[in-house]
Image 1 (spheres, helix red, strand yellow):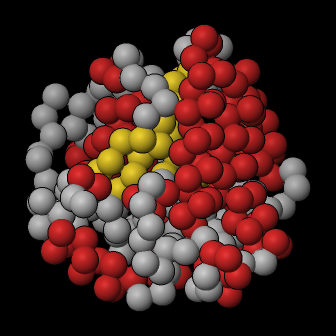
Image 2: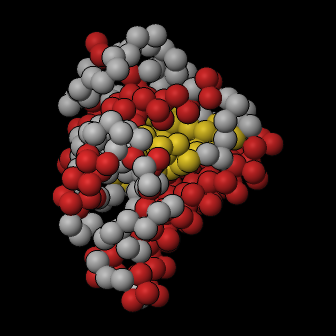
Length: 273
């Protein structure tokens, strides 16, 4: 298997960029692609490059025109809308996967949301409605996906979600998403304990700050990026290809002895006091 240490991620999927067959025959769902800069797209591109077959979703009609071309370049077998705030859409995605594939080997959950007015305010000032919606989209949806994936993972599988260092430490301007991501990481541990007997492994991946569409909602995000570059031992940001490689490792057999962990991909930022 050959994989360049830090390669630029192809903007479009090209079959000639295939880098190995480590995941050949594996089938998985990737949720959260918004455009070619998304962490979810970095994961999907690497998973496909290692040979996996993919199911890809987009949020709504507006997002489809950006995501469908990427899904087609990734040769996705299943392409569907998915808004976890809309009743029945999540169940419809898993029903389609059951019909098309009859099984599922992995799920990549890379979605989060908080109302702007709650995200930009103090944690103690957030509304009950805003906090509930952030928890529903960012945390509960992962647990619901785990529940729906369980019967399709009769021979085991891997569930991966995306977190951030603000789940563990107080990060300026991350605000309400800190407690929400902390709940998500706890959910990973509990799900790993509950599903481990069925061969289903569960992880959170915690990238450093990346300039994605989702990150643009965080106040003073450029300052957060500058801080990360200055403080991280690597003195640089990671890229979505690096995150994708780690996810491919977790999905693959090489990580068979691991579960329940939060895996940091942040140039060492989390080790600095």
